Image 1: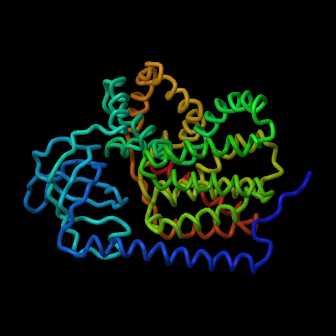
Image 2: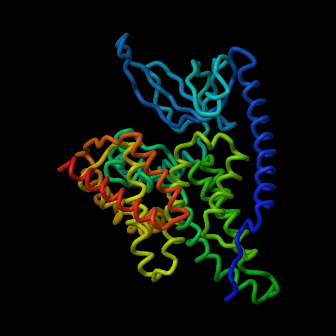
Image 3: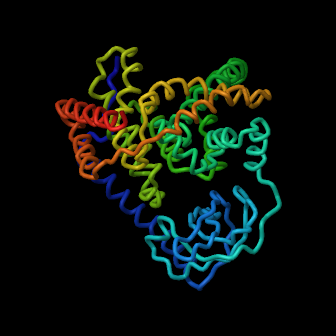
Length: 422
């Protein structure tokens, strides 16, 4: 069997790649800065945006109640604003508004910011995403269940209560469309396209490379889906890795390596600098990092054992990130290993059931799952613990002794978390 080669065989190639990446990053930041100057040139600007979130908030000082809106403009700008208490529910709607963002900094522009605004117009035209969300809602009397499926299919943000519930159960990653979902969709598309393509190839173009052609078709469909969802960071990472992985595989270069992950992350960051501040992007990268770490150090393990152990491994090593960000834990949290495994079957089956009109088949099951996540407890995680975890993770790339230290460290932390809730 021919052995696959490494991506960077010489230091010179690596530094040339870094130099090229630096030029691309400089140009990307220049474009972003020009957009920032355009936004802040005058005291106010007219923007068109989609309302991602809408919730009420009461001021602690004035005791007045108002509504907070999280919006995303057509240019990919994410920002917050507030509106009067009586504003109708416009979540998911497109609006035209005047935004006073003249005093924001470039850093705030790249991350997210708060600005005063005035809604000029609420578009009545129903978008394709709204139609799809409406279709999903029609199958579920329970709004929470509808919200779950909308998050799975159209990347609609979960309500605050559901976010807390699923972080308590340790399954927040299943509701945020990422590489896991992309992998399932890719497999489904390949399953349906392969026999159709083979039939046409045998009769009309037997000289074509079937793997390349099917990959191009699948990539085009997934790219359209990515654009339809407004390019969520975790899904953008997954799509970028899909492209890079196939290109490297097609050229006989190793895919399961930290170089592949580094290449993908760097390319995405230089082309889309805002991803530096996207938490979902880094969580997605971390998940892939720990999968690669396992497959690199335990590559000689039987494939069946790899399949069984990877979910346990990823759960243990992602636990510090989960607690540092969400802080919610329960006795049911470790069961996320089981939920993650079952989700591989649930996700495509739920899509099929919604297509044929039986989308509510799992409603009672999901309602029971939501009830399990109600009794949550907070487990404090010192920032120093997370820094130590990240440090051990990076050292584990080079020496297997650090892999075992990392595993023991996280096992102790897991026992500590369970002890604090029992």
